[in-house]
Length: 269
Image 1: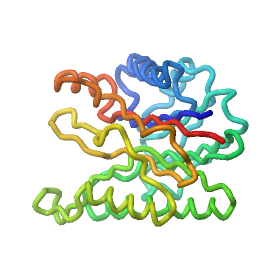
Image 2 (image 1 turned 45 degrees about the horizontal axis):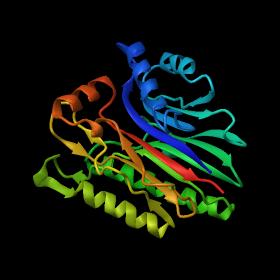
Image 3 (image 1 turned 135 degrees about the vertical axis):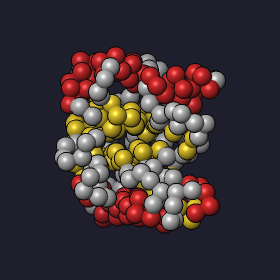
Image 4 (image 1 turned 180 degrees about the horizontal axis):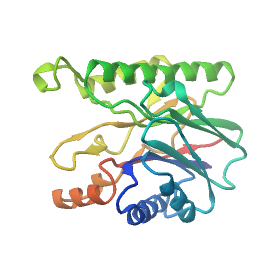
């Protein structure tokens, strides 16, 4: 017995050609979990509300939830009918990091005997000290939330999404000025997660983002989960990573996103 979750930064989802792109994105989401589609999915960088209205038609058996605020890019979360005993949604504004950034989107679902808070995050991007500090503070709040849930007897938190773990450079963003590498930032996050009795989940691919114009990739998207959460298998990374050539990879990025999607299955009890 398990349920499935997908998290995906769809990169400025809206604007020109939005109808065609919505159809492509919907088809890709439906292809997961042996063609059934995930039980829950969270999408980041939603530009326009009409994109969500179009998704309603492609996912008629899902309930939809969306963040709102002064930020230009929103997040949408959807959950399939009939899978969960209960579901509640809350916008977690304390995870914004800065007034212009996205809040967290937390959908808590009851599956089997337990409740699973699914915290979808799109954390601050950039390699300046301020960006790095925002990320560090935001991820620290994940660990604080885990401790609070443990006190309540519900330590089954899953935080997932685009964490933008790209390191830090000072005073300018170049290799000569790099102070914290991408790999070091991720290693620190994993170490702190263990101290907080959480785990950084293994993934099938080490890189999740790829530049549309350069041969540059990075490990930006992650899943942190309580030690009480058991994943059926490593987090599946799908998207541009599956393309066999540079040309096909660039085509996929143009048609979908520069981020691959994260897909996981959570074992229920």
